[in-house]
Image 1 (cartoon, helix red, strand yellow):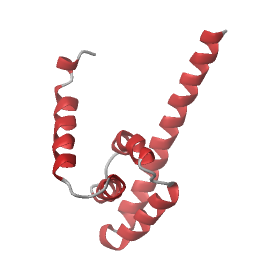
Image 2 (tube, rainbow, N blue to C red):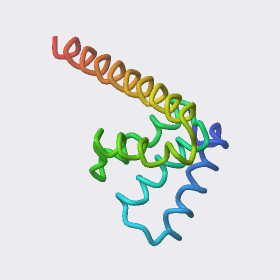
Image 3 (cartoon, rainbow, N blue to C red):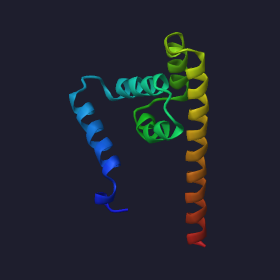
Length: 111
């Protein structure tokens, strides 16, 4: 898909870039805040998936995500935390499936 065919994704990328430029938080703290915000707004699995690579790159661990869920639970409530855990599991499952498919394609190409 050509860049001119993705106006929504382009707009989201621009908004994110401006947010990052104007934020004084370090990369790790920024991703912790973004994950907490995803939980708070009941974000779908795709939103977690879109942030997973960057979160991993800055050192966010599964233990960190557990900590975020525990920290925000009193504010956002049990339903949001349970939903977030499910969305995170879906995102992880999708990421694993994509990685497996890529590995399989590489193995087939190497013959």
